[in-house]
Image (cartoon, rainbow, N blue to C red; front, side, top):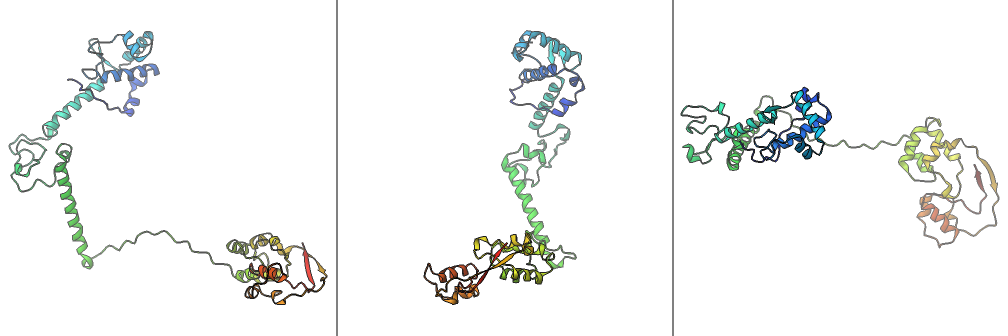
Length: 343
């Protein structure tokens, strides 16, 4: 039977690798065999090594596979000695291709007749009662069946052969029946002896913020630079025990002398992790210069009280003290002796 110019073919890599006869051949012989399979796929009859109805000799085959005549002869002899192919007279034949093509043709013929011949009945009733001689394929038109409606559940093989409309009708009928069954189960409500518990939708677990350690708020309130509070809380949690507790650490902080320039004050986390309360500081008294006429309300006070005062003119000591208070820094009175810390 003609091949009808198939554009594809079935290929089982597992069977290819499991063929003991083929595996015993050299790599060159196996490469020639796959080239021959491609030629036999286009041949008529299918699975026979023919080119335009003629048997190709070794020279012609070498030209088609881009090899030498000597190499092709050696590989052909090796394949034949291992029993990879058969011969029908002078024609090389692939047993597997012929067998698969026969199964394909039988399947097509069975499909045209309504399915697998071994499943068909020869009695007058046929497979579907009232549809004599129609095999597994039900009528598309309901009137042909002598019924008001077509069968709601066709055989699975029907969907491969019946029109799309018939398959859609069968699937819609099945979906409607499932919906009705689900509605009956839902109507049971509290009457059910053992109702299933409600299933709550899965929600992503919420991340709960870790509370600040005890004593940290008071420490952070006294510390002169308020930045990176979360990191400072983590550092406080790590070193508070080493410092002797929260009260002892707060006392160390109160005794510590920071630079009056805010840019030289480390972050609280840096100060804690560096154990800066253990630093030895040399204290010297700086004599006060000539007395200045300043508004002492802006000096030596809580920064929040200073910020609440009127904003002084720029360039004045009061303005510098007010500006420092906006970032939480206390400014000493320039008319009083001050101590400078030398770390």
